[in-house]
Amino acid sequence: MSDYENIERSCGYTFKDKELLKKAFTLSSYDQNFNNESLECLGDALLTFIVAEKYYRENLSEGEITGKKQEMLSDEALRPVSVRLGLDKALIRDKGDSGNKKAVPSVYEAFVAAIYLDGGLEEAKRFALSTLTPMPNARNYVAMVQELLQDNKEQLPVYRKKLGGTARNPEHTVSVTVRGQSFSGTGANFAEAKKQAAQAAYEFLNKGC
Image (cartoon, rainbow, N blue to C red; front, side, top):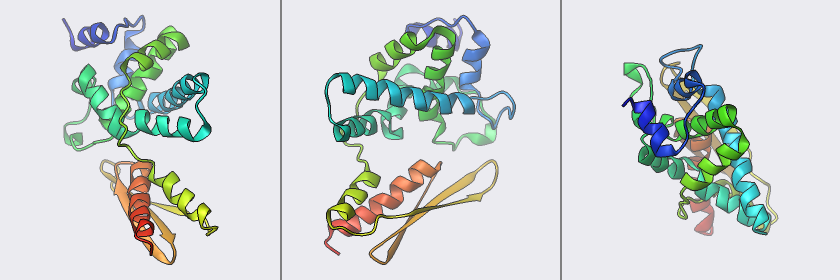
């Protein structure tokens, strides 16, 4: 039995379009033209909708829905789900791309998008809601910094992005200034870098500085 057949069995969904399944696992480091980047983008939007709709129907408030999205859809939450389902082992990548930490949570997003394109929204919902695992300790530092500054009627932060490194190993950097102090973060993508910068700013603000 192939890796893909094992994944289909463990995930409870059999693809009609096997090329779409393969595309969900192919990284741009392996193939610049046939890869999962657009599927990741679509999957991210789908998962945001699926989780928001679920908790809207449960009558949660805007803030509670935002918190649930952070708990269920952060990289920290998606990474163990991908590993549990064996998605990480099926990744197709260049030999020099072993340090791409974003690839593991992102393949889940691509896989959800592939299910949606192959079998429709209800199949994507069924899969996502049966496999997502909340991570309550995942904190939304960006929102927490904004709330602290709003409560004190202070100017809201502006995050600045900078891309460095190389095409194969990009370095994403985000900086933010609050109360005259500058904080920065780096990560595999701008979202992770922004979170690091916001966490540093939040810890500074929380000290009563």
